Image 1 (cartoon, rainbow, N blue to C red):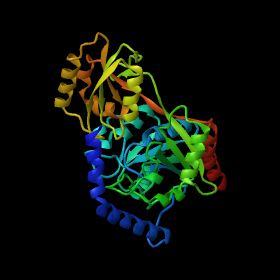
Image 2: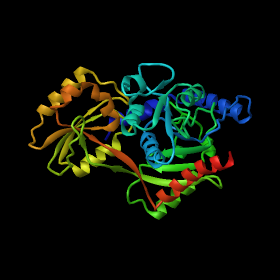
Image 3: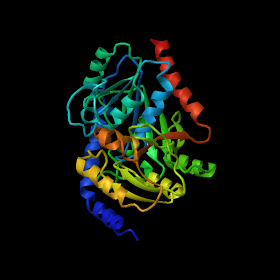
Image 4: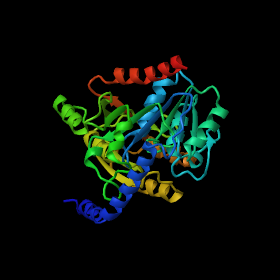
Length: 358
């Protein structure tokens, strides 16, 4: 029995009055935007928003990467994020000298993977977008990362993600639940993606979830599962496959590590873990602890594994990491029920139709 989990759930129930107050504030704010009392701005280029209604990991970063990979060869693409837990403020456009400390781990991940696209951060998107367009006037489409609840901007295409294991319809407002926006805000999304589904999700389960979400006519529903790639060394790039003989030390500072732990249970012989908070800024003491825990592992085939988000925050120790078997596990969305072609078509048609109408 998980007593820690039971205690946490019980404690969050006690915070119900705060959740009701928070929910009231959210509803009032949305009402003011819905009635046009608070104004939303639009821009004369395609804006694609990737977001969710809850806190925690629903797969926003892999979805931004999916869109960037889909679009960057055909269009001049930019991404705009808040830059969560960075040590700077205001608008920043990434360049060759930029670090994760300056722009945050997820934007740094985008910058490393797609050096040809513009990667910018800014807390106030309505201020950052004009600055981004000034710096990169050739930009044809901007992907707004985690901006669904930021209603000062009206995107042309909203992609809303919800976790298969924690559908927003079964959730409640913070801090009792994980919702940071009201469930009815789902109606603003053109595309809804249920993420982290089991690979073998049945058609009956698909229909049951569709009934549960009860989307409006015209909204389109998709399902994805997590697909892990081949681990590569954090500095050298050499790859190694996970086998049933491996003992793995998992170094993880992400919002929802449960799917990753399940993956290691199924593919490695055994694993130990060093858990950190989401967006944790690693210190030299953390690195020493990793080395200590690694050396204490008894297996002949042993190594350290981390996520791509964590890797960008560890690269500042690149010299120390050169001799350490620290591997990075890539992750991406895989569409179920042959949904990728239709999803891709909706996204590209949105952009093409926008420019045809201009």
